Length: 203
Image (cartoon, rainbow, N blue to C red; front, side):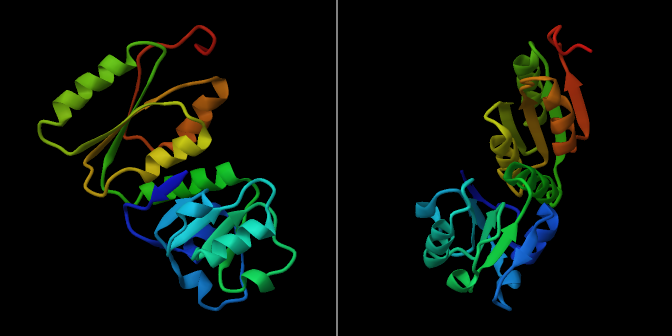
């Protein structure tokens, strides 16, 4: 996962607050450093990167991220020692997916766009195409189609909204009943449209 923050940079301290993470660092400057991109790939780290550490919370991974220029790392377990990564911010959260969803929702709220969320077992694609064709005549519309790649992909679609967007049109795939409440909490929509539901989730 590689994400460039299109709505402006955010500090490590702000990121910790929005993700409900504990910020650990030996550097006075680290909390104020600006994050401009997020990645799970060591090879994609650049200046201003928040590196998302894998599930094993490897100190070696954190050290490599710091060496490659990351200004912060997001993990679920604090390293045994901060001395080897003394110049970066370590954000310790309970769950990576939860943290990314919280950050994505808060970050997307910076935009001036209106959100139209569309779901259903059938008919949503044609409905979305119709809505898009009408709105694009006068507005800048960003469309996310049939998002179904998992929780990090759901969060990434919010990070991907361009700054000049007037309307964000998103088609949401309901994989099971739990997705309904989760996506409703993730997406602050101005208009919600349900075309048709499968019998298994009608209730």
